Length: 122
Image (cartoon, rainbow, N blue to C red; front, side, top):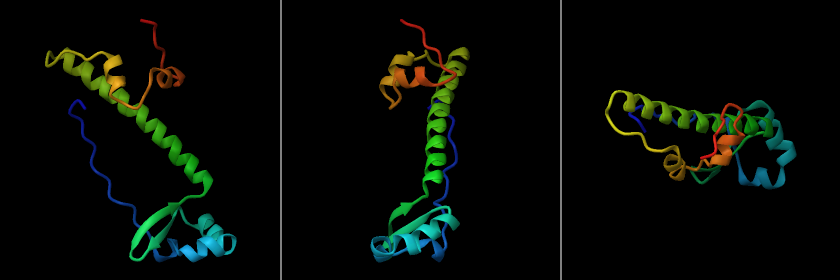
């Protein structure tokens, strides 16, 4: 990216109330797991002493998904802004958007579907 680095986030902390066993997941989902999902932001399934899977209720998953999509769009906008600023100061020549998109997971169709993006035909 154009020199802008966000600080690394720490791993999420959790309490013992958020840990569920494989047995509870398999045999007691409605009785044990579902009530905890209503109380806790997420649950973790451990295998031995290591977390192996996390669970979110669907509403929280949708919120997380929306934030991830928004973050992806913001990262692209920051990249483009950094490139424009670098070009205006004469540091480096701009790389065409088509080349930037080719190296990312964002397609031109994704950008076109975004509510604030309008692409012109080349």
